Amino acid sequence: MNYSELQSLVAEYIDQNPSDTRATTFIKMCEAAVNKRLRTEGTESFDQIAGTGASTYDLPEHVGSLRLVASNGIPLGYMTPSQLLLETYNGASLCYYTRSAFTIKLNAALASPAVIDLTYHLMVPNLSNTATENWLLTDWEDIYVNGSIYEACMFHKDYEASSLWKTRFEESLETLITADVCDRWSGSPNQIRGA
Image (tube, rainbow, N blue to C red; front, top):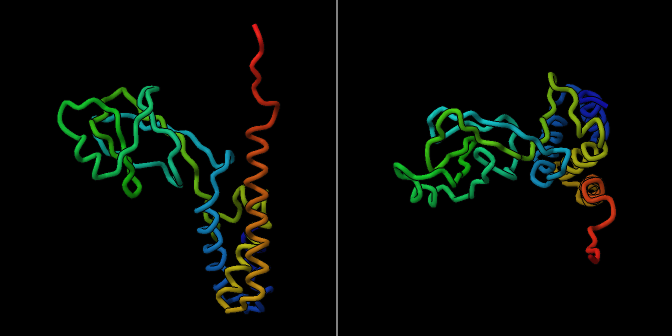
């Protein structure tokens, strides 16, 4: 299934004129709901930011939540933006960061050739007329179908149907999360053996 097929399916379900664009809105609302909850191994990504002597750097595109931030292999501690202001002064050693909008701010400047290593969760890339597929639609199309139709039912105030589609959406999303946990933690548990 691709984006136009998903749009057609949602439009057909809600008996909508194909030239009406509300189906795209329901798909975007589904993507927003998925991005709030989905934190699986499949969404993990790694990146590096090269130091340029600054203390503020733009984050890579599609960064969801940060899992680990390190500088030259040493993990940095997270602080709220207001806490970081108190830790920022000339001559401070680099040991804290905060996230503000689409930037990462450090409590001290990062000199070259130092790097910041980022481990983060990607947001599901939004579908559009130019980006007609993403990994979620390819591998878990039921999440898109159930979530988009749920949003459509809510829009049309069909609360009985929306309850059914919400349950289907939640179950399909939970199936993906459970599959990820099984993949990530498969195998026998660690055991302590006698000497």
